[in-house]
Image 1 (tube, rainbow, N blue to C red):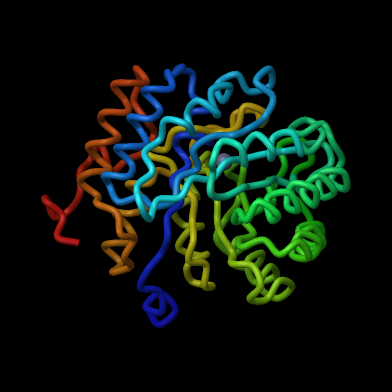
Image 2 (cartoon, rainbow, N blue to C red; image 1 turned 135 degrees about the horizontal axis):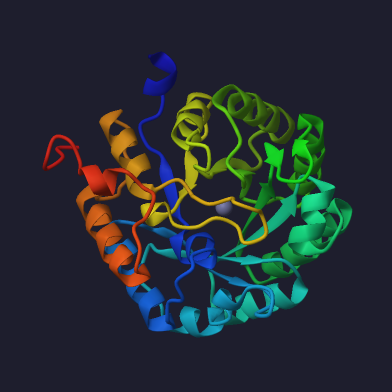
Length: 308
Ligand code: ZN
């Protein structure tokens, strides 16, 4: 199909160390997190969401963000991003040596209050301040519109709300604007529609990026739909670990190895090594003490060994 053949490369941002581990019941040490990051780099990852610089009281699992950033390998070509929600967080993140700052604006008032203790308006203002500081420090900036497809408290999110937020965020000049299906409710036609709206209102100034949770088993279909409308950057989490501690039952990031298997078989390259990802997932499961929701690590590649 022409619309798929137009994609020959898709970039995967690995979010297991942050979005993944933040919501996992296991508590990994800083050394274990560094070991995970080394494995991800060995599998070919060049963009890793490593940590968040938020209140350690709110998110205890990310309390070691500074120590982690001091210990991660500084391989050439690998960039680390960190999630921040306010000015204090961005100052800490800059001092820690991250390469990229990621902010979040939630597309529903109720969830915004629950997640960030602020209105949408206030969180856009906070992003402006974060973005200013990151820009002055010479860091890449990306911003996520969370719950862009649905809210656990308010239901379906009006596309015009997402559009209005995107327009205001675009004024700050982020390298990427991510549409996040934080609670895994989106379906493919909705994904294609909303990325179309994003493209129309933002143009080429900010690259569109997709963040899909597989809570209702629609993440892979949503990624294909997004690829079909030109999205070329996606978040994924090794083994599918993670979720969001503030969204009830929002388990399950889409699994990196599942996405990579599918894309490679579609002749869309990612630069990642599927066998290394599968081995890393098995290793991560032993560290977490439980299995992970991804499927390809269980089934293996095909053909075996995979030729793509
Ligand atoms: Zn997420």
